[in-house]
Length: 440
Image (cartoon, rainbow, N blue to C red):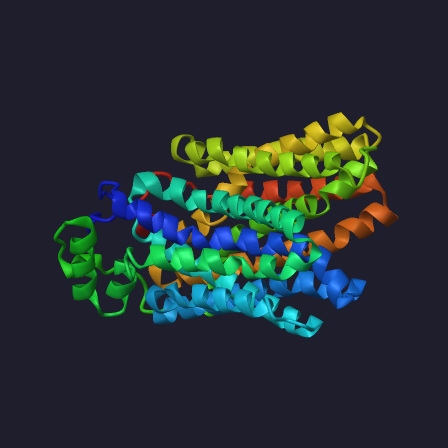
């Protein structure tokens, strides 16, 4: 097979495509975070109970679980182009409809559909991006998607804070509707990028059209037959994904993803309560600023990791990072009465070391599977990771209340150690490999 795509020079087209494809992760971070500030006014105006707020908070995660798996399969079957903008249209409409919501159940339904659409964008956009990127930029720009997630989360808190400050509690409707502005922006950006993956087209008997797209966007002529990947006669299914050839890979991708986000989401969601347990005043700017700084460190940790996966390699980066992530949470578990500032430093160290798994969350699933099941694999990994996120956010407050800080963080260290073991067992090295050879 020709390496014209893998060896192509990095151009403005790749930059535009990378920005367009970052829309899904950015909107994920924004939509999941803006509800936190919106619930302040929503609870008062709609007289929400604790159970109502739990339903609203969980609805998008449940939607993501279903949407990732379902739309990953559909993307491999019907193509990236059909799903490429439809998910953004759905996100925009649900955000706008949320403005007029008057009942808890309508908000829950809209949040559920929003979650499905956000999760759908991961297998769609990351597969499309990975199938166009040159080797040298593939790991870095697939890893950039998690940075887009943190950017969306930070933007949501900024927008929510400004609207609460100047609009009061009644601004919650504008907060939930504000995601439609981002949807419109990325819809416009996506119109100037490639409509379909040439690899997917070649896989589905449209090699001539694939070659035309390569020539249009990369200015290189290619024999259509050279774009067809050599693989089994199967055309993609869950049975194949979990069959002997790919079983270890999908278990690895799902396993390390779950072990990472279960602790990460719990830490970000209940950061103020954790810091309060160490003696930091609650309900003040101190605990909010502390969680904000920890979130910033999560983002900063991704920057060196993006370089390390292309220099040191994927396998040593994720193994060493998971190993180092164990140390600070284990230290807190052993010494739960440590000073608040030292605990804050330990949480920041965990956030920084988490950079390696963060940038490989979508890099590995896109590299380890061939075109005909790539989006399915990304969707399954995303869906399973949301189980970990939901369990982490559900169990952490219960554990802090019933077990205490020490045992809670010892369990977190144990789960991180499981992730370390999964990486030692299953993490392959794909640095410098073409997309086809990495999948083989």
